[in-house]
Image (cartoon, rainbow, N blue to C red; front, side, top):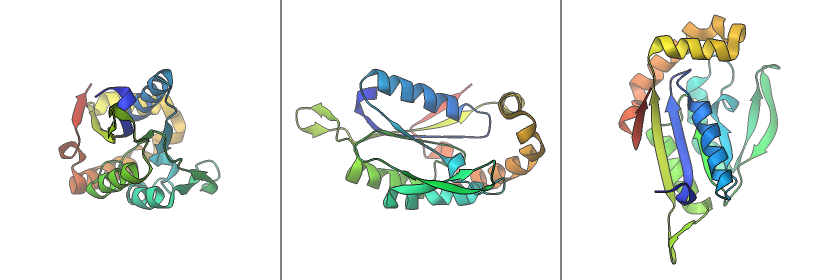
Length: 182
């Protein structure tokens, strides 16, 4: 499946595994083939440092309603409303992006709102690619703390505990099309 055939990409992995970087690279490549993707970052759905599960559970509602209020980490409050555009490729990335219910919601969104990118003639792709990024703990921690510095450092352990609980319940690596190990 080529980039021109993708209607949605869902990227999950623990903090510091490279989700944002992969999403940004894919968005750039999609723009390079004439497609303007929209990014849905779960960090915009988490209601603060204790909100991983809440943000993950928000994905189906966001997709069915077509919008969400972005969480402003500096103000520690939800801010402006952001629309999810129909007919454009959607890249969803963040801790908790891949759950069974989120994948059903993505499939429903693609069926109703996807680009209907032609593959051959009148056959449409409605293609979804799901990926889990796996990186060793030491490297993830270095990457996350070098990216977000002292802002994230006091929250690392508490966020990791949420990841442990969430991923024990959902096992996203077993639900994805591909596991990428770094």
